[in-house]
Amino acid sequence: FEELGSLSRKAANVLSEACGLQRGDRVMAVLPRVPEWWLLNVACMRAGIVFIPGTSQLTAKDISYRLQASKAKCIITNDTLAPAVESVLPGSQCLKSKLLVGQGSRDGWLNLSKLL
Image (cartoon, rainbow, N blue to C red; front, side, top):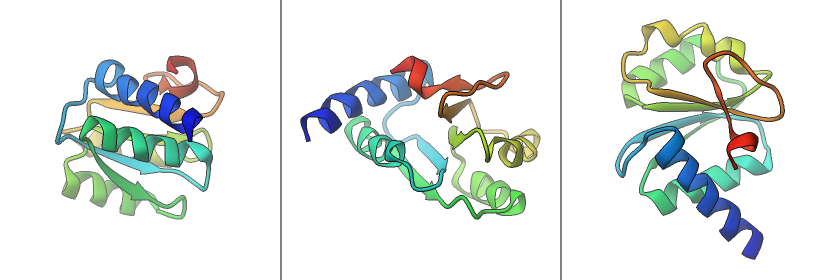
């Protein structure tokens, strides 16, 4: 629990500072079952950010609809799902930042592991 508390404080700072999110902003996470899902969930609670969970089975159309309906300012995904997410990004006006979970890197994406 101590480790989760420490990491969630760091992750909350990443969301607030690096991603530029404020209390009440919405974050959409399209992730499989990985430990970072829980870390980001707790971090959002700490920072007052609304966490919108999404399964890795969402299609590009599903992701696009949820981004538009929620007006999410940040999206979080992994290397595998990033191409599907990127295919719908041109249509999302509210999105400010993109956060990648894992060791990989992509142009225009922030890497959670490196920021922590």
